[in-house]
Image (cartoon, rainbow, N blue to C red; front, side):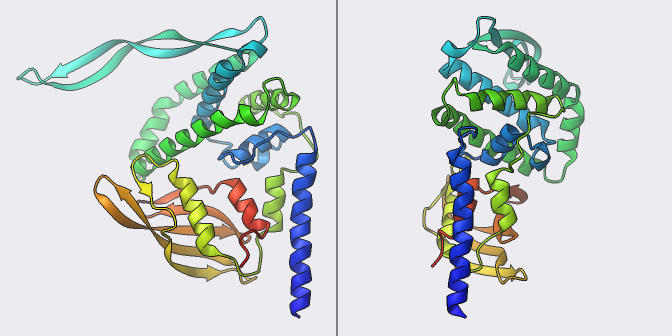
Length: 324
């Protein structure tokens, strides 16, 4: 019986390894290794928009556009065409300041804006697609703001957006190191990013994203080093935290709250240590699994906000790299 289980384990690992070797052996793939938004970028590249988890998140998409165009403009200006256009940004032209009866400033806000050149350039069609999305987002801004203000989890959503921004900053700092400025893969990604933003079909590959393939196969059934897995997941998430600092290797009191029909964890809770302005404290995290793989991380301070685990960690777990 044990030998059969061992053979199944080996076959499972070989299957996953083949997925990876096949995906990365093709020059037609964009390199997303180690990126927070690797799955998003990969699905845009292959044109499988239906598999995007955040396909209705215009706010995220607009942040992505801004980050990508600015990064490309800084690092790849020499590769831009002659008809490149200026990347503009809005800055405050006139502020309104209110004071109390003692003359102490009580508030300051902008009442008039102007456009200013960032000093960077972009490809014309890419910039137009970004601005069209921005104009659409501006039209919906009031409704969106009201929805967020009345949402019971308004503070959590704001913090979540800040974490997404930090993760995007990291991705933008890496993507042009992983893919050359003039790569055909990057051009294809850009064409599909335009198509997705314009709500039309992109250039589609038959092959599914490697991340989807791993999810479809599911997680391992053998015993895993959950302490190391949780440490890696939380350590990675903590990079995007604004205030608190995670104490590495501080995972304790791991509890498997429930299992699926294959005996794999479906919900795990654990405690961890972190430091803040108020000194050292202890928090908890709840990890929800889907098909045997980590899907959402919930933290004690914002228990309703699902943090998506980094794809590379999930894939390592699927590849049995946490096996004891």
